[in-house]
Amino acid sequence: MNNDNDKDNSSPERKTLDERNRMTELQRIRHSCAHVMATAILRLWPDAQFAGGPPVENGFYYDVDLEHRITPDDFAKIEEEMKKEIKANHPFERIAVTRDQALKDSQSGRLGALSERPAPSKFKIGNLQDIPDGEEITYYRNGDFLDLCAGPHVMRTGNIGAYKLTSIASAYYKGDERNPQLQRIYGTAFKNKTEMEAYFKMLEEAKKRDHRKIGSEMGLYTIDTEYTGPGLVLWLPKGAAIAEELENLAKETEFEAGYVRVKTPHIAKEKMYLTSGHLPVLYADSMFPPMELKETKDAQVAERYFLKAMNCPHHHRIFAAEPRSYRDLPLRLAEYGACYRYEQSGELFGLMRVRALNMNDAHIYCTPEQFADEFNAVNEMYLKYFKIFGIEKYVMRFSTHDPSKLGQKFVNEPELWKQTEDFVRDVLKKSSINYIEVPNEAAFYGPKIDVQVWSVIGREFTLATNQVDFAVPRRFGLVYRDRDNTEKTPLCIHRAPLGTHERFIGFLIEHYAGNFPLWLAPEQVRVLTISDDEALVKYAKDIVKELRSNMVRADADYTADKINGKILRAEESKVHTMLVVGARDMEAGKVSVRLHGKGNVGAKPKGEVVEEILRAIRERTP
Ligand SMILES: [Zn+2]
Ligand SMILES: [Zn+2]
Image (cartoon, rainbow, N blue to C red; front, side, top):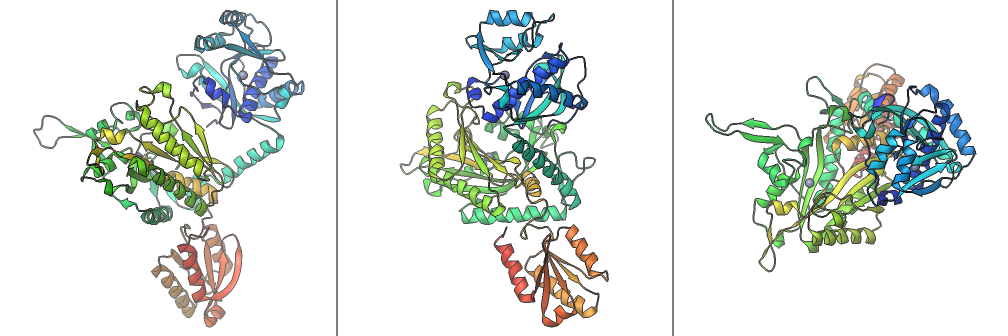
């Protein structure tokens, strides 16, 4: 988040050569724009000292030390200078130098500057120390501006098609609070004006569709920081209705795909997480502190219990609860499991970052021979869901391991890494799935897939992570008896296609702007009577009764208010289907159907309308 006057102490690690090579054209444009912005700032304030200026999600920043406090009022002036630099169309020239030369140039204040200066380029000296021995040291020059930088850049400043400065935050040099505090100037850049305008339009639309705003207007959820606590969502009846529909969808889909459901408690003993490896260190910061209790009054030691931060260990113990044979596999254990994760209060954000999450979880235990089919079936399930929710753009990021980091960043099982990564790659290649492969970003226990989706207005969300795990089942001693009567450890696939209720509903609110399809709408049908005539009210009540007996969330407005007022109220509450009934409708056994945001679609026989409503819900029509 880069709001004005925000604190931002993230300090992205120095990019590896590999990451630099993978920088997209857009990232190159943005990073090049950071150099152009620095050029412009130096023209206005020649003593500015620059630190680091990487591309970030949606733009770039450059950290600067400067006595003048830059404010948004300065943006136009800086952008005007940037325009000159872009118009000059200077090439970005790459210059390789020795470490001695770089040190000399930093001392003479020449780096991150337009010329030599009385003061040394102090932060560049520090940055120079971060470049490992043996790695080539390079400068990039555009016009007078010379900077210590490993690139890559676009060819010329003129390749920056459109740009805009967006905000200012403060940040410590290298993210360390013992270092000086710098001004972090954020901007963004695009290939052309059209793309930039589309981006800002999307942001504006996203603001209108903000899940916190719509969530509160519609009465979907509340967060009561005083009594329940920050990051703990209270689902109101309308939000709970959506969550239940999602859960029903998952249950039906998983049942059909051969999953079995389990239920597990929200806490477990410390031993559970020591065995899984989440404790004592790996995940400790993300877990709530333990509860201690003595089983008897004079027990010597207290037992430590933790709130579960993930469902897998509980499921592993269910696997271990009975002897398993190869005939029992694949075993697919599913649960909408509640997890609790400690997020710092500054990180909490509406439904998107919370401390209690309800996860569409399942763990599939299988043999290596079954893996490809199981993995493929999980992907198919994703595609099915995308279709139901009208998600047209998605990508699966397949993260693999780096063999040189076995035993440190990745569990030391070279054979299993190779085998499972080959399986996954094979499945992805054979299917029509849209994926990219990202080396060196796998989880410790196995390769993973992050699923990213785009809402209808073009904003990206990370929906869920699938993980292949060949290490933890072994730590729990999970085995099945194979055909040859030996004991083997199963592979485990962790998957959660609908993510968590919290995050997914947050996404859906933006995606639909609160105008949910009939099957998901918190209030599906409202019957509106034209008058409060007794017979008419009875006619309306019977319709509501029939719908409710079919599990349709139907209500009625029998008040004596004018019909236009009733319609307005229903539209404001985003009721999906309004059934307007007057004396003439009643006599003909009809109802007038009105759809939210679409208006009147005409009168039809009552039975037909009920049938259509039930079918649309059953088929989850978008
Ligand atoms: Zn650069
Ligand atoms: Zn899991």
